[in-house]
Image (cartoon, rainbow, N blue to C red; front, side, top):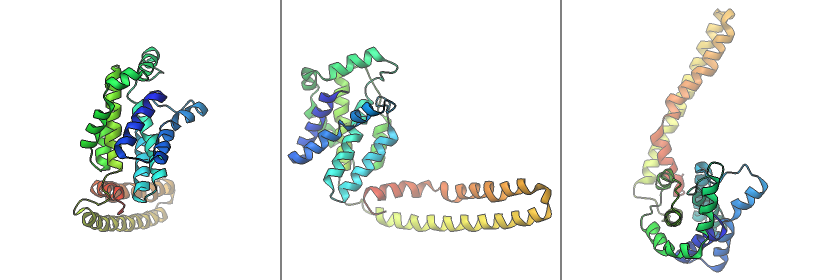
Length: 255
């Protein structure tokens, strides 16, 4: 997506969020920043969904928002939205002609008007929810298309819903903090259990190495490296319930 399309969507977001002129300028500058990166590094790909980059910048934007640091929040939000919007257009590496045609069309003022940006942004705000899980689900649904008007509409809706999630309520849902504290205690007990079990494994391995020195390398690898990895994965790495709650807690600044 080219400069005009990025900035038109950002300007409509600014209007919806009632940003000051100073803050609007930060958002408009930030949403163009990845193109300046690309001019210095052609390996920075925009037209594939950069899931980790987008999510990382959105989490930084949310953290800055919770700290009342609006310039930093809008900077990271702008970068994330740039990569999100570009992912809706076919990659130039595989579909050069279609990519160039679609990018040129998305800059057409008539198309930008016909796409109904304000309505799309209103829809995005109405369907948003302040949660990293909501954002992750939204990102997983991002698919490129050849329909230029749909691209603009989808870019505006997604940008608005994700911006609304970042700027959502600072107050955590009822019970989240208590649930996080309880699961954190359980997770710490799992870490302790994994550590003690790994120590027992190492002690058993040391004894066997003394008894069977000809197999010392194999026993060392088994009891000092492989077994601790398996133990920590079983006790700690598989605690998905805790990691899910921790991500939510971080979104609200209580982790």
